[in-house]
Length: 181
Image (cartoon, rainbow, N blue to C red; front, side):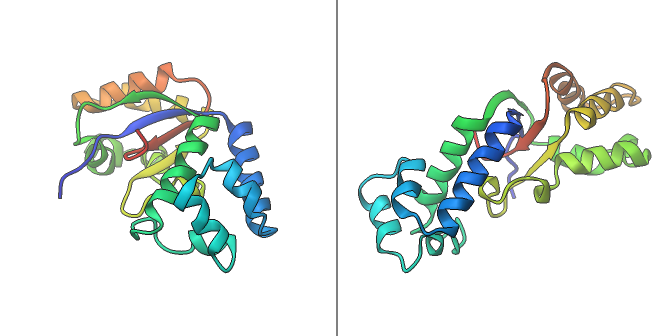
């Protein structure tokens, strides 16, 4: 299995919550015209929403399903434009494994909790998750603590040092993702 590189995004929490609220409202009310406008859908993608028994039905299948892949891509594209800014991408596909298994991290319970939060997909809104993908979100305080903890490791691999530097330079909340860039 080949691994992808992890990227960090600065999160505009207010914009992300606003987008999430709009999306939920349009899906709950089955407001297809507003949903199509929100996601900037055209042609066949717009037609899929309009022809579905309910607007939400188009998002009930996995994002890997051929018919839903472009809808989820549009959903993530708009969410990213409105609420995320790419801050850094790792050069190493080994970063995820290092976060999960580096002894220096796993021996420190607080650092383990922080590293796990950065990879905890349950912290990420459903529309930004991808089947089989890696993602997580940390608060500003968690980001700062994780950056500081990575700096204190004895002889850390370069990818962990690079992550620590990137986390330190980023402001606010940080979203980690392997397939948004």
